Image 1 (tube, rainbow, N blue to C red):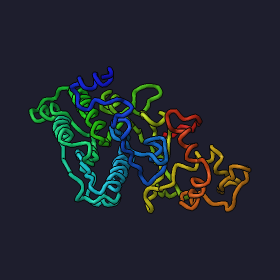
Image 2 (cartoon, one colour):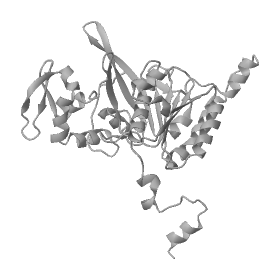
Image 3 (cartoon, rainbow, N blue to C red):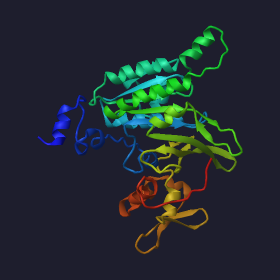
Image 4 (cartoon, one colour):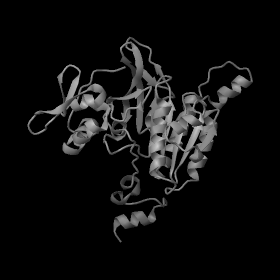
Length: 346
């Protein structure tokens, strides 16, 4: 018997395995959404997506946080016909029709109202303990930023106005307990959170809830937004994904995803600037865009307006006939080769 076999046999942990054969690293699920640049922001690859573990979506109010979470949940439910969405709700801002807008069958959603961090901790750990790796479940918490601690609730009931120092500790314990379960049982958890502005000469957005969230998360997005206007009318927003932390994507990457009042999420948004930077698309004159022949550098007809660069017809040949997918991976994925400097977007 080899030393490896002896160590494996003597281990008291039944999931002990040779790293090369470990299912925790070699059998990771990856859930692709319908929007290429959301997949890039999650994994660094167009064909990647949401992986098991903790993903935190943070930002101010009305920054599309819950919508991004439901886009990911919808992709998961679409991939697995027997999957269930476990939805922990502290804000009650997502009525049934909101789920239906993202193609989520509400009969496959288990809605669990929560009032404090401890209640969430006890319930979610109990649920995770009872699941097997073969069970297909995605968990969404909306939101942890709005959750009080049990002590804060009790102080309010007893009319005590003392500072609560227990919330950050309770949140740290929550995610410390959840993280091993999520990875060992192949379960993605998407947590919506708030941000606050750091005090100082150059304030920046800080994810609320303390350091425990940073330690446990695989992905942290801080979401910004900018208006899309037609003349003087606002017709939608670019919601800018700022990659604050990622195990897959280069940190501080910035990816805009366009959402219009009429058409919802623009599937092909976020691609134009990076395609121009890589010389897959050119701007021959003001307001016009065209594809570029990668071998000759020739500008290819037809020229189109910016609105048409949000259509599949424009991007399909770029993905099919070039190495654009590989270029995106090099730019955004950790370990990629290319580097790119984007103008800072807030």
